[in-house]
Length: 447
Image (cartoon, rainbow, N blue to C red; front, side):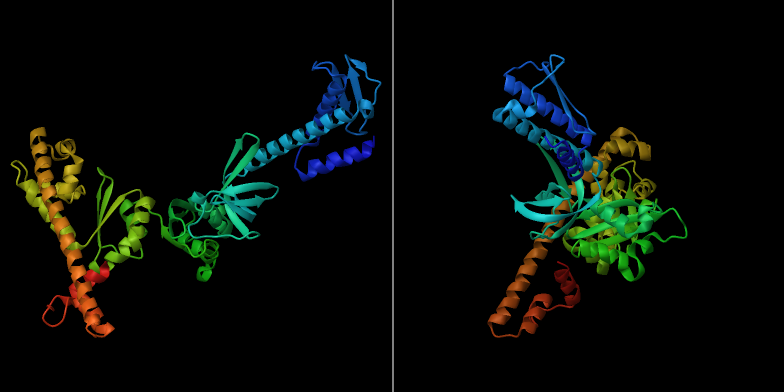
């Protein structure tokens, strides 16, 4: 037996597979014992023992405590095959344990791997010496990798499943963006700038609220970088995903206002009982505040932790006036009490119906029977308002369909595309026009 060659092989395996050399020596001793048991056809676990000198590579075997004179080479082919199988299995187990231990420590870290293939929608990625996978749910929608592509991702989870280690990767998790900011913005890594809150719709848009513990460091400016250099690197990594960085504030009103940018907010009313913020914006800011498919307000709500309702001044005023008239119609409720409800953020009959009688009893210092009547009256009115809102919505949709049909008719009759567009906006030709054309145009375009 070439002992020095054996030791070099052990050293190479330990280095390449990151396995402790002492563990490999122990595995070799156990494999040799298994080979001896196979040769002598015994099941006694205590009959044989083997010791390998880690310095010289010399093997010393004993049977029932006495030295075994037979050299391992004399065990025969079947025993040698047993030795080989045990060694292979032990090495695999050791490597699996090593990978599990290593990647468990790296959970939450950024890793760079190489894309291999797709299996059932999951992307298989090689990271260092391990094979990991990224489920479809953790991929950015619309993103596709080819074999050999570089993949930057976050190690989300490590699981020991049977005879293999499953390493789960993610590019859609919010923490992935946090880690990217730690890489690109030194102040974030050094905890001078803290990411206080975050909301993300992977592949589309992300909002971050940041603050600085150093008055000399502008949190937003540092994250954006000179001429947007820092944020550009992150956006490029995310294939153009929009990132809004807003300034954190302990005041919920200020934070909500910041989170809805670039829209300009006119007024904010907070109802702590419902966790709801009613935000008033001008008509020309409405679509900007809501965002495409409601994305801006949805992310702002998740960022701030408030349920946000966006209203125009007209809608807000109408809702408050309805609430005032409804609650004051109940005997025992005066204008000062209605003012207090509005100050508490209950700016519609829907809010009062939702908070219930117990809150009204405590806040307005009225008896339970009166509070119950207020809630009941508001519930009836809320149903009427909801029905009217549904009718208005249906009428608006019907009008939009009519306008579209008129536009199609103009085109069919040989009118120009410009005539058709004007007809769709203004609602027909000279006979169908009215003085409120601009307002109607805004309504249609706002949809």
